[in-house]
Length: 124
Image (cartoon, rainbow, N blue to C red; front, side, top):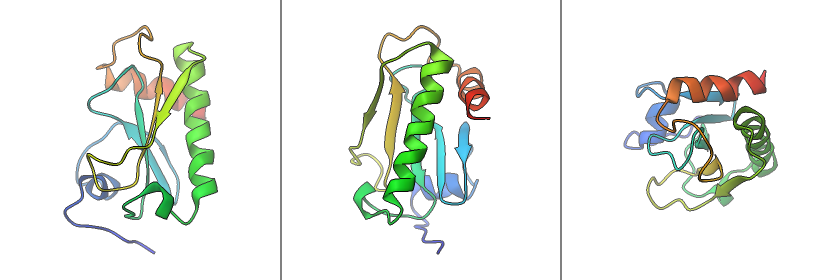
């Protein structure tokens, strides 16, 4: 369908106009590390098409399957059973799900390259 908003930062990330530490990508969804992480590996999962709210995404089941894959990869990569999620949608008006290991997870939350690689390794 290719619904985009030229003023949306997440749409620009989807179009690769803005760099991001991508951990997962398929035809419909993109997952990348948050630039203001709560913990190491804090990931945002977005639909590639621009939808304002998570609940507007037509492939909601597939969306949450991706979230589950990311959460399981984070459990393994960071040795943390507790992985949290949030759906807020206030800061960026593009549907997104936060998935992140519990606060206090050991590691450097700003080491984006290493944290992205850890997650990608478990998604292979």
